[in-house]
Image (tube, rainbow, N blue to C red; front, side, top):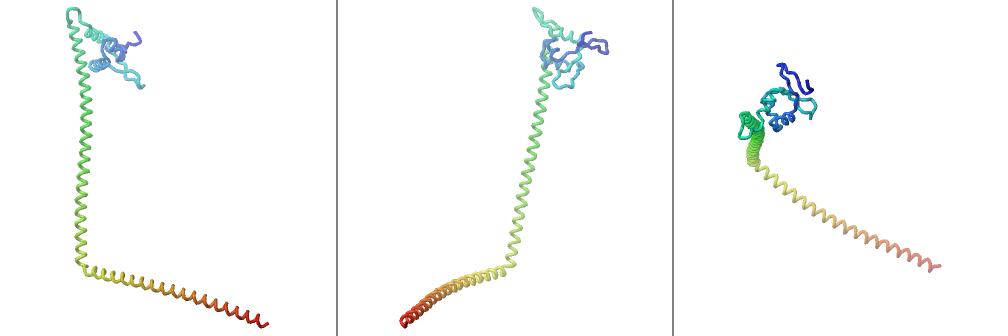
Length: 219
């Protein structure tokens, strides 16, 4: 038995072929070969190593039947086997397109779900913002109402405090003015004291000079 053949439990001989080898033997595309394997239900061996090709156990009799179905038409028209081959190829194409359509529909459904979720989150954020604005408006109205009540209840006290504050400001201004007068008087006193000290020093100097002159003349 060849190395690429396997004995099936039914006694039929199976060939170990990859999708590419099936496509080459039948003269079809790789996608059509995958569709054919799924449709026929042929046993597949998926390798553990990434990148390694999948091996399909193909009954040799069924593979020969597929070869007859995909034979080119004889001259003068299509044979029944050729009609079946064309039909099989068309069905394979329809199956492939159906798979692609299903995948595209699934992607569209996922996008719609994400869009719905985003819209729901936006609605929740808008509701939260509206609720915050409403609560802020209520809190502001309550604060203004309490302030009005305080002003009404303590209006006279507030007025008295303002009068006392004005009086305190006036006293402070007067005290500031008095301090300015005191500083000016102190400066004048200091200036007068310096003049007196200078005059006293000049007087003492003249006395010493006269005593020295009188002593010199008496010698």
